[in-house]
Each structure stands twice: as C-alpha cells, then as structure tokens.
Amino acid sequence: MTDAWHRFRQRLRRDENGAAVVEFAFALPILIMFIWGIAQLGMVMAADAGIQNALGEGARMATLFPAPANADVKAKMQNTLFGNFLGSYVIADPVTTSNATGSYTDLTITYTVTPNFLFFNGPVITMPRTKRVYLTT
Image (spheres, rainbow, N blue to C red):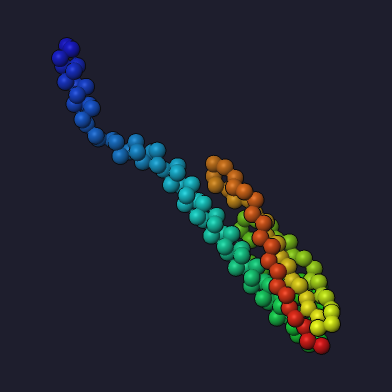
C-alpha cells in the first residue's frame, strides 16, 4: 500500500492540470482592480476636458461687447460643463478686476473626486482650473 501511495503522490506532484486555473484565480482580482482604476482615471480626465471646455465657453462669452453679467457667464459655464461621472464641480462666481493696465475677469471651476478602486478608496483629488480673460474697454 505504501508503494502505491508513493507512486500516486509522485504522479500528483508532476501533474500540472488545473495550475493555470489556480494562478488565474490569484491574478483575477488584481487585474480587475487595474482595469477599474484605468476607467476611473479616464473619468477624471474626461472631467478635466469638460472643465476646460466650460472655461473656454465662459471666456468667449465674457469677451462680448457690451460685457454680459457675471451671472450669465457662470450660467454659460454651467450649461457647457460635461464629464461629471464621479465627483462634484464648484463653479465660482466670475471675479472682475480693474487696474492701471486694464481689466480682466478670472473664471474658476474646481472639481473634487475620491476614486474608488473596488477594494479601497484612493486619495481625494482636487483639480482647480482658472482662466483669466482680459477685457477691452
């Protein structure tokens, strides 16, 4: 009986059937986490593109003559903003400043998101974006 048992154990040690399934079971959660993380990063990048678009549209509107109201510029930025998949946006009121060289308006949008990597949350990402629009008088 011990000789048959010894041969069975040797044959079992050399048999690699099912090894790929075990390795795949170990690697699958990590692979899924990486794919999900790449998707999360893509959503953050889409939000950044949406912010840049909204700032550009707000800047175009702010340069019109006669100058539109700040509330109208903010509404234009709100209406052209896209990419809100995960986080939240804060659109600041446009700030117009005049000095000896002229006047300008600062447009600001801040995006805040906490990425979720399935098994844990990532760090809070805060992306403030500002565009300065020089106004003609």
